Length: 156
Image (cartoon, rainbow, N blue to C red; front, top):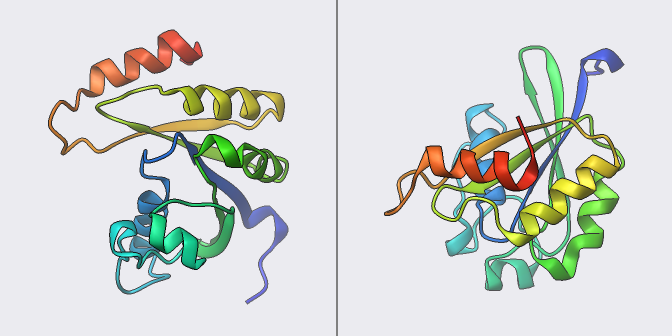
């Protein structure tokens, strides 16, 4: 099905390593009906981690793109790596984004690579929303995590 260009959105999932970017992407794909079973990163079964090295290490190495549909819109999703060694991958992805979802660990809050990807998104004027992940973990604190975003990233 061809989409009107005004109904296409390019969204990036960006964050520090292990914040849960691929897991969040997996959930979006599941709840939009794109996939029928949620793969788990720790099992090497995530849809977006297609390289053997990614499956073995449980991390994203290269940006991976997929598409899904929601409420009459085509949503192109780019799941980006979070490791500092792959920062250039994130930068390449930011150039084409209409918006970004920045994932933060509810226990750790803002981490060093969170600051890097936030700064990169500023450089490319990418509008963002923040998603606090891992709220089920011991020590998770939503208010503290949001506080670190406001304090360290000067986000509102």
